[in-house]
Length: 234
Image (cartoon, rainbow, N blue to C red; front, side, top):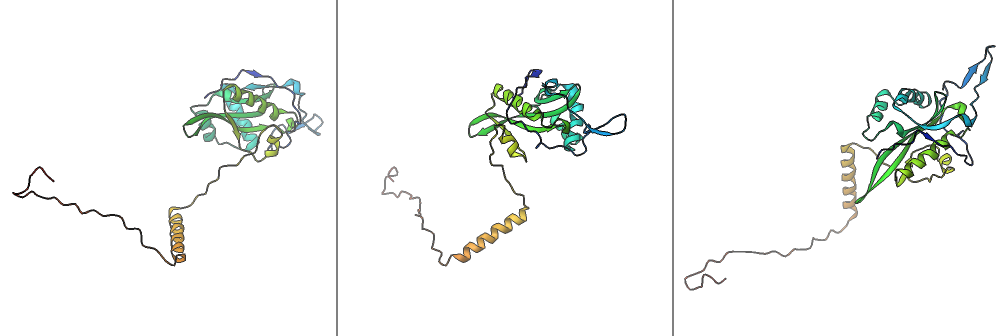
């Protein structure tokens, strides 16, 4: 399921906007600016009305990679290339907020199918939500999440999922905390040794082991007819 979003998505007002909890890189470019006098001043973000949410185009891929590396210090070139080569990937699956030509916020949608028995449900994964430091508290992430929700509803997604270390931020914007998938890793020898240990412990706790129930047995033999018997009778 691919998403072909419109080139521009409207950004509406929302309550309780607070992007300060988003993850930002300490060394992100554009955080400080130098005046002609050499004094350092804080970079001021343009007013909210000067930016809008747009769908990415193939020409944005290089700039998006630089943006993600500046904020998250990842992905690697190989990981980013793998995202672009995903069979379900479309450039428009990335939502951006731009100030002029500069990307200031980013969100990526991943389209997947979730199976529940015989049911196949389309779901949308939200990933790589990020905003530049000077655009904190400007509602960038909130606007991206609203746009992503509209797209998922329009494309018929039954469920939207994301993984985050900031559940409160997303809970204030309508997301619900759910359990995560857990797993463990171990070597085959450790697993077999653990199973054998539990089996030995179980045998030691059982004082009397009853005999297994006897199953009915059958003894089948072939009877050959004699000269006084009818060969067609059994």
